[in-house]
Every structure is written in structure tokens, then in C-alpha cells.
Length: 581
Image (tube, rainbow, N blue to C red; front, side):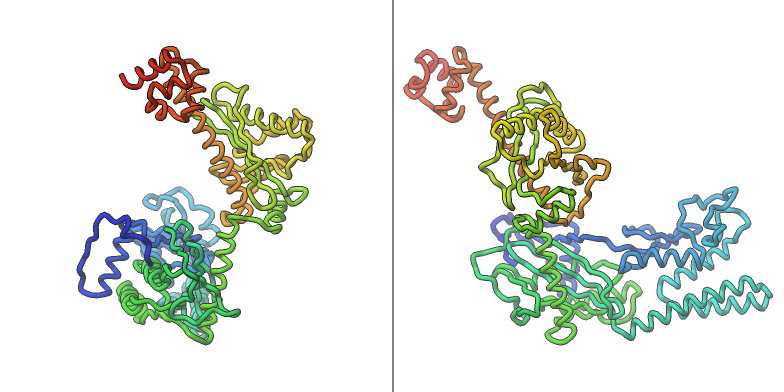
């Protein structure tokens, strides 16, 4: 992948290693350690849960966690789908009686909690309810269970059941019997799943205009259990003027296969090599088969690295296969993932320029508007500690920004920092003029701000006797939308929602326009201040000089003749003396 690295590189260094496997491992480590800007960074929409067994504690507990730490605990997973981890921990509570509570187990407490009374905990926090030996025995059972060693667990449980029955401890023997039944039922389910198919991860992607979407399907026991989406929307620009070419190493896309247009500069093989390394190296779980749409140079070396990693971490002694299917059912899975990646791309990136009726109807539904919005006017306030306060209004109309209708406002009635009063002023001025010119009100008035700014705009409209005007505000940090009249139920849209993208785009444009205007006003003020320090140069002369020369720098470089064409000779001499003393 040619990213133009040579244009920005200050130096090139080489590290010599023994073989391809060492090179892959070192590359992966350095990328994660130094985070270079031209390497692929994984951006995942979800983190899958693990089950944590705190073996370093005197009385270990079991938790669901999404963060792996080097704390001496054992971690199992990740689990797909995510709620599977919670179901397994719930089973451990009910059958093995190992808790997840935050109670201090280093000392005894006067009474047990509710979990003990409903039969979900052995009660190690209260003296006399259990013994360390019984508790550690339950922990060993949980460890065998989570490691998938059901045969060893069943054998151990049967031995204990027989001993309990021989000692006439029939209630205890019945508990072992029920636990054996649970374990054997799980074993049967796993055998059925294994007969239906192996575990596999299936990849598909769509690249266009320098933006990339990847879909990863997790297949467990021959079934697609979950999907992950990855996006790269701020990659260095990879596009060229070349026509899109077919992906190397796969047939041309047709109506039944995922279309993946790429430019001549995008190398899917190089991308996949880097992507798979960062996704799997160092992870506790790797599927037996990984299906990818294209071949790449380091495939066999990466297979060997992942296989050794799996064996080294106590996994099953089997090889990890990275396969490029060409036909049949596995090829259909690749195409399915590719089609989904195309849909993910469309949902994520194409909404940045919304121009369809569907987005208007979606916005109507999301904000409970009376009709699909055709015109949105958005306001923002900009200042620095109350100085040079200005406002902007930008317009979105029928799917695009209408810059000819943008407006700038200098706040006149507000002193100091008061965003609410500033918003009241600008909304009042805008719609008072609209009423005077007998123009239509917009479909939606959008405010950049929270509830305070929303209520200020509402007060301004009420003062003009404007009623039933759709009004909303988008809060910057929370990224939730407050709708006038239903403030108690803010609209929290999914961060991939095209409606949220549209509202954010309009809001960001209003902010940009306001900040640009404020910066320009501040620059004019700063330039005027410098000129007005010159004896004999007042506000009127300053304005004439800036209008003629355009900047203080141009005035500084002007000679006496040029200055005298705008101001008097005495003023010209004073200006020359000021800048050249």
C-alpha cells in the first residue's frame, strides 16, 4: 500500500531477524508500542466479554469483564454473542456457588447476603457456613468447567457423589448428581455443534474513496453467531485518478458477489496481513479457520505464528488455517461478508452528504416533527470570554447546505459571557426579519447547545408570537438531541445513525462559520488597535487604511507616496516613523 511515506519520512531503519515468523511478531509489537500514523489502527465497534477467575485471591471469585489485565487471574473467552458470558457466570452461581460479589472476603461478616439464601453462593464471608477446602474444591470445578475439560469434571464429580452416598450424605450426593447432569447436557450440545462445523472467522471488505469498511463474521459450530464492523475513515488519501480495478487473486465481482472497487494504490493483501496480525497476535482465542477474500505474501508465516501461539497458551494442538476460498459454500460466506461490508460502508460513509427523501423521513420520525424537514436553520454563538461575541446561521435545504442563505450576526445587546442572552438576541433578530419580509419559517430551527440554549431560543420565538415552530438543540459532549416540548426525553441516536450524522454535520458547519467570523473580527480588532496607537491616527483613518491596503503588513511595507494617497502627509510620516523607528 503506497501511502506516500517516503515524502514524510526523516529516516529509515532496519532490524534483521532470523525468519518471517520473527519479523511478523516484531512488526506487530512495534506497531502496538509506537502507533505509527501510517499503520492500520483497529477501530472496532465492540469489545467482547471474558470470564475472569481471580485465582490470586484467598477465596477466588468469578466475573464478566471486558478488560484483560496481568493480575494473576485466569481469563476465558472472548464469548460470542456477548450475553453468553453472563449466562455462563449465572450457571456458575447456580450450580457451583462461586460468587461475583464485591464483599471483602478477607474477614468474616455477621450475616450472609441474599445470594446465599437463594442458593447462589457458598457463603464464605460468614464463619461456619462453608470451609476453605469445600470452597477451593468448587473453584477447581469451575476452572475445569471454563477450560472445557468436562470429561475430567464429570469423572471428579462422580467420584465425590459415590463417596457422599457411601457416607449417607444423600443431600450432598443429590447436588453432585444435578451438577453432573448439567455438565453432561453441555457436553452433548458441544458434540452436536462440533459435528455441524468448525469454528471460523470470515472476512469481507469494501474500499472506496479512501474509506474502508470491514465485516468479520464469527462462526462457532458451523453457525454465524455474531458480526463485527471495522471502519477507517481518516486513512491517508489512497485514491488516484486510476480506474477502479478488480481485487487481485479473486474473480471479477458479478451480481451475486460483493462489489469491492479499489484503486490502484490500495493493496488488499498488504492490508489484510497487517489487520490479521493486530487482530489475533496476543489474543487468548483464535479460531481454527480464518477465511479471507484475497491471498497475501505472509499468509503461511502468519499461520505458523498463530498455530504456535495457540499451542503455547494451552490451546488444542491443531493448526490455524488462513484460507482463500475460490468456490463452494466457503466462497459464498466470503461474498456474504463482502456484501455486508458494502452495506456497512453505505450506512457509515454515504450519509455524510444526505440528499435523499429517506433521510428527511428518518429525521421526522426521530424528532417527532410534523413533516419531513425541507429546510433547517442552525444557530451557533462564538466568543472568547465574552469579547467580540458573534453568531452564525447556516441553512440546510433539500439535502444540501445552502451557503447563499448563511447569515452572520454581531451581538449588540449583551455584555460579557451570556450565551443564553446572545441566543435570544440572534433568534429574535432573525425571525423578526422573516416576519417583516413575510417569508416562510423553516421546517426546523436547530440550536448548537444544550437545554439552556434551547429554552433561550424558545423564549425568543414566544416573544415574536411564533407558535408550533419545530425547535431542537444538539448538545456537544453528550451528542443527544433535545426537542422543544419533550425535553424530559432527549433523543439519543446510535453513533452510526444517518440522522445523527446529518444533525452533526449541520451543527459543525454552523460552528465553523461562527468561529471563522469571530476570528476575522478579532483580527480586525487587533490590527485596528495597533494602528490606533499611532499619534494622529483615529478610527476613521484606521478603517480607510485597512480598506485600501488590506492588512497591517501591507501598511508597514508602504512608502510615503502610497500612504499619502490615503491619508495626509503628516499622518503618513507618523505611520512611517511608527513602523521604522
